[in-house]
Image (tube, rainbow, N blue to C red; front, side, top):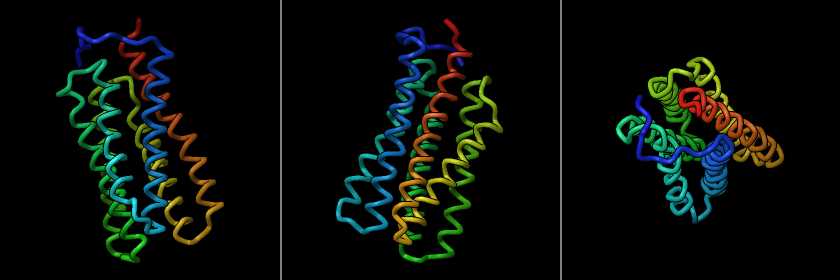
Length: 184
């Protein structure tokens, strides 16, 4: 992929900070949606709408380095990731066991597609590490949902603490790959 010449390339610290911010927003708004859906709070549509802004926020970081066309698959796959996750949370809350199994399989397949899209964008990413990172993200999110539904709020919070740490590690991995591809 070619670097976009009309964009200002931020310094290392700025890229890492920006990448961390968008991934922390991802997990914070996901957490809020987990609570809204599992507790059946009336703000579900508003929280979901805010969460759905996150793929474009992530895409904006990548657009500093890659063409819009190159990052469109990532933005689309991240949007699908959030849509599947919302459906999975709702099916879990509603006790739809078969639908939960179907959506879980679809969610992990989507994570694999995200890893492939990132690898196509940047050859400095490690495919297996991306898959592991994304699957861990899903595992932790599912654990939060299950704990929240069971009324084990302490465990749900503990799982969120883990997903928060994982989001920072994910952001750092993604930023590091960009820095390796576009050293300055």
